[in-house]
Amino acid sequence: MVNFLSNLVMSFSGFVATIFLTRTLGQEQYGAYVVVLSVLSWVAIAGTLGLPQAVRKRVSESDDGNYVVSGALAQLGLYAVVAVFLWIARPYLNAFMGLDATWILILMLAVRLGLGFVRNVLDGQHLVHVTSVLSPIEWTSRSIVQVALVLSGFGIAGAFAGYIVGAIVGSIIGMYFVSIPDRLPSRHEFYRLKSYAQFSWLSSVKGRTFLSMDTIILAVFVSNSLIAVYEVAWNLASLFAIFGASISKTLFPEMSKISSDEGTVDEIAGLLQVSLAYSGLFIIPGLVGAALLGDIVLTIYGPDFDVGYYILLVLTFARLLYGYMGQFLSTINALNYPDLTFYINVIFIVVNLTLNVILTWQFGWYGAAAATMMSAGIGLILGYYFAKQVINVSIPFSEVGKQCLSAGIMATVVIIGRFNTADSLPVVVVLVGIGAAVYFASLLVLSEEFRTTVADNLPFQLPSIVSK
Image (cartoon, rainbow, N blue to C red; front, side):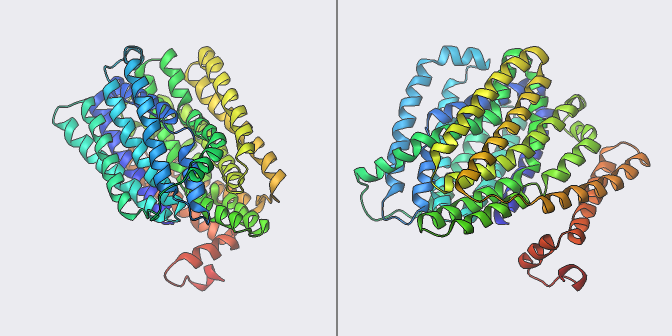
């Protein structure tokens, strides 16, 4: 819950900042900012090579090794190598990004890797709640600095500076909570990190492929203004997916610990079933809400952003599929089968890249969105298949069905409200609130498991009609 609420605050902060940046910088400059961030995301993969996942896994296990220091040394070495290559390739990078921004990219890479390393150490030390709080702190700091500098006339440079400041603030605060073992790392720690990272590095590529392969390909075929709209639609779709991501992030170290302590596989299977039951809790009604109100919601970013309505729907469905896929892959990794996720990731990346190039070339941004959705569907099928090889998978169809039914009830109320009111942002905000209330009220009535979960996590007693 702490992780989810923190991500909610972070998303709101980013939501407000994005509105400000799109309206102040304009679609073209904001699109250029998005392209630079996409390049940074891919470069960051080369600067980690699976190390963050390996650090999180090894630190989460019951082991006396010093994976904090060994991981930090390995991370510093990787960054140095990548930074040199970036500087050598700066003419080509600047040409692709459309900005003389390679030196900014190198600085942004440093703070991004530093913050990512701190987060993974904290996750491995079972301090997910602390890591969760870092996200809104980072994003809020970033947003405040970006808004202040852009208003002061720094333009896109102010947006980059805000990114750097936010990451530095998050890293400093996170380091305060990191526990460093009082022993020197040995060759054994480096070997164990390598043994996991050699498979897990592709997981980063897979994640980044899903998150920004389409943006990179779009940069070749469409204008920055369309990329800006596409990115806004993607951010809205991602907003609905934060609860499922919170579940996956929270349960991974618990599953990993059970696995390393030789706990029963049935315990992990039970946690997987819970994660699948709640992965779609917010994104299922989010998809329905986007279909009913998404065209008006997009105009918050500017009058021309409503052209991304259908893109929003496709990307939201893609995030739904990817969320379920993530639960399976997280479980497989926690059980220490990185070789299986490696195979899944190879197929996912090849399919995603191939579809993105072909469909974007033929159909523009609609093709990019379709490629993202189709690759997520294939990844979900593969994740389910391989998870069944190592654990007893029980799909909670009943709970997911109740979420869909509740979303249907919500849709009926929202449709009636929209047909009887004017299309305006204030009205949409009211309808969103009413829809959310109807959805959760319906789910409380329909799902005994959801009632129990809510009752167990509230500091007060629910009325008997709900808690029975």
